[in-house]
Length: 241
Length: 241
DNA sequence: ATATACAAGATTTTCGAAAATCCTATTTAC
DNA sequence: GTAAATAGGATTTTCGAAAATCTTGTATAT
Image (cartoon, rainbow over the protein chains, first blue to last red):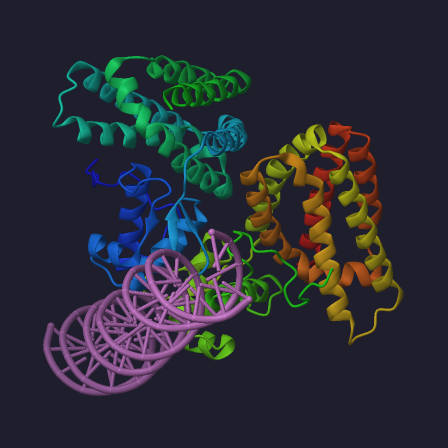
C-alpha cells in the first residue's frame, strides 16, 4: 500500500531487474508523470538544457527517457529539432478512447471467461478502495491535501480498471491498454478535479454496475457498460474543453 | 517504387522532418531489420562494443535505437545489464497473432465502411504486385537473387496488408498493427522461404479471396478470411518449429 | 567440502565537450 | 521593395572518457 505518491504508475515496459536503478529509468517515470498531469504542457518544446536542470541528469539519461516516451505517444520527436510534449486535440482524444474500447472490451471478455477467485477478489478490493477515496474527496475538498488526494484517487482508479482485465491472459493487450490508459488520462486530469469535487457525475455508480456484471460473468452487459463508461467520460471531458 | 531493398519498412513512428537524417534513426532502422530477419538472433545479448563495430556509431545513437526498439518489443532491456534481442516462443507467437487479429479485424471493418476509390485502387495494385512476386519466386528459386527476391516479397506483402486497413481512420490502430506486423514477421521469416519456394501453401489464393470480399464490402466475410489467414500462417510456422 | 569475501576484468551507464544542424536577424543584390 | 545570402547564436546530436555496476574466478574461513 505504500506507494510513491508522486508517480502512481507501474512501469509500462517493466524492466527485468529489481526496481528502478538507473537514472534514465527514474527520469523516464518522473517525466511521464509530469506529462500526464500536465506539469509539462501539451505541445511544449522540451529543451535539453531545461530538462537537465529540472531532472538533474545529463543528456544521455534524458534522451533515453525521451525516446521511450515517444513510443508511448507522450512526446513527439522532430528530427534534428528535438522533442515536444505530444499535443492534445479532440481528434486525438476520440481516437484514443475508441482504441481503448477496442482493446479493453476484448480483454474484458477474455478475463470474464478465464478469471479465477483471486481476480474477483482483486476487483472487489480495488473497487472498494476507489469508492472510499471518491467519497473522501467529495466530503472535504480542501485545497492543500486535495492534490495528494486526487493523485491517490488516480492511482486507485488506475488499479480498478487494470484489475478488471488483468486475467485476460494476453501480455500485449494489457500493455496496449496501459499505454492507452495513460494517453486518455491526460485528457481526464483536467476534468477530474471539477467532476469529483463538484459531484457533476457519479462514476462510482458506473463502476459498481460494472463490478456486478463482471462478477455475474455477463460478458455482454459488462462490455456494454465499459464502453459506455469510456464514452461518457470522453463526452464529459470534451464538454469542458 | 525505388525502395531501399535492405529495409522494406516505413518508419513505425514516423519522424516529422524530411527523411531520416540522424545517425540514431539510421541505426534504429537497420537494427530493426536485422532483428526481424534474424541476423541478430533471438535472445542474443546486444553488447554495445559489438554494435558499435557493426553499425559504426557511438554509444549515444545505439542506446537511442535500442530504447525505441524496446517499445516495439523487439529488444528487451535488463536494467544495468544491457539489452538482448527479444526471444521467440510459441506462447509469444500465439499472443502476437491473437492481438493482431483483434486489431486488424476491427481496422478492416472500419476501412470497409469508410474506404474510397483510392483505397480500393491501392489494394488492387498491392495485391497484383504481391501476386507477381510470388509467381516469380516460385518459378526460378535460384540461390543468389533469392534473398533479394524474398526481401522484395516481404515488402510487397507488407504493403498489401497495410493497404487493406489503411482507410480505417485510426492512427492508433494502424500503429499497433504495424508493431504487431513486425513481431509476427519475425516468426514468418524462417518459414517464408520454404513455403514460397516449395509451394507448400497457396497464400496467394487467400489474398485474392480477401480482396474480393473487401471490394464487395462484405465485412463479415472479409474479417473471417483475414482471421483465418492469420491463424493458418501461425499454424504453418508452428509446424516448422 | 561448502560457503563467503574479495579482486580483476568486462560492461553498462553517465557525463560534458565537440561537431553538426537549425533558426533568426541582418545585410546585400536585384 | 523583395528576395536571396550570410553570419551569429541557440540547440540538437554524437563522441569518447570516466564512473558505476555487474560477473567471474580465486582465495580464505568455517
